[in-house]
Length: 119
Image 1 (tube, one colour):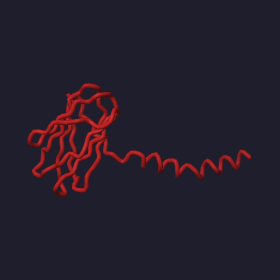
Image 2: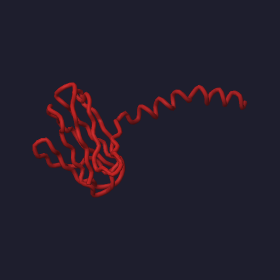
Image 3: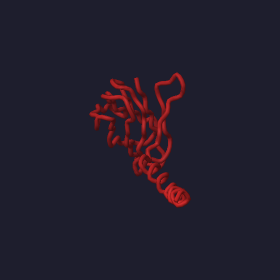
Image 4: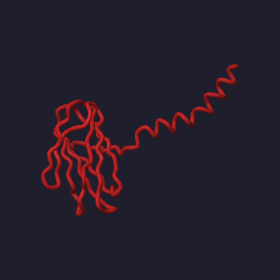
């Protein structure tokens, strides 16, 4: 009986790890030590979701630092979607609760540069 249970458990392990990995396919943004900002450089033409852990009441600033145009689709946090304000190539948000925030960004070329800052 123990052997049968062990075989069943081992058979299920690949399925469990695939589901856990598929649950969050976002790209984690990290800040360099003593910095308020992190960035991404690469292809976002078809859209890319980023993940950033933030505290409550932080000012999240998302900025285009490349030559192409970027479009921000949404920012959602533990409380749902955040409303932002856009000025030129910069969009500002105020976080409501601490936790992971997901940001979807689109670019118009195969190489974009995006900066994420939290104050």
